[in-house]
Image 1 (tube, helix red, strand yellow):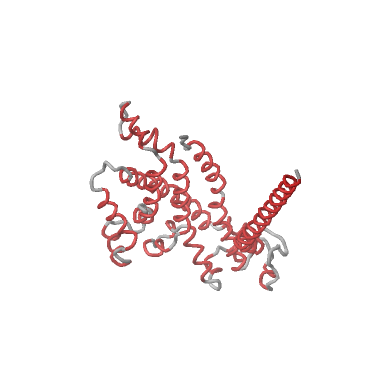
Image 2 (image 1 turned 60 degrees about the vertical axis):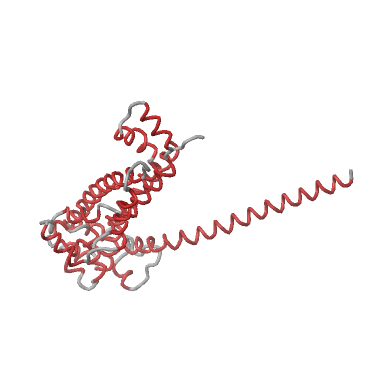
Length: 305
């Protein structure tokens, strides 16, 4: 009896000690996550505070994480600037078209290459993956776009980047590891075609990877501006990031690109902060919807053994 009591007390002590270990570990992990989150959020909060502050407070370097001289003059200047609003709407249209076409191309490449019955899929995969490491260079690419008469058009910002070997490899690996062959074999026995299997079985079970890659495509296109500098000279075809990069790079010349209302109501530095927020908030609004869709896709795509 005494030995049993001693063993029981030892086991209770070990259990309590183990609980304390888990709690301490959770606290450390939470602390690390909070620090990482702050490093990402604090610059965003600083820009938001600057965009809502007065010109005098920003120029005197008094604004850190709370607005000084709270006002919306910079945002009013942005909405009065027709170039900024047009660039925003154009960027949204460009991103939506690019994401849809990119996912179609990625799916059409990844699905066949994930099947063992496809002859020569190894060689095809190698040829596709080579483009991820090597390219023709900027000047040959520019000459190609010129010969194809794609310069100063929306398609020059879509077609060259529409195929991503990296995204294709991710989707191919997902299809091979998450979609059992028995499902497709059963569908074939029931008389389903390859397209019916793709649209009725594979894609509904692939919602998590579709949501993730769609986010990759959308964010990548939204944040890109270098290709617009190479191929676009018309102001009507310049995306929002192209205009924003010009504002951020040349603070002294930023006022020259603003309309008269913007010049009167805000300084270039305040206008830059408001422009960054104006260009960042739309793409950030996508994350909650994609996250919800991602979780739903995981539940729908779960395969019970």
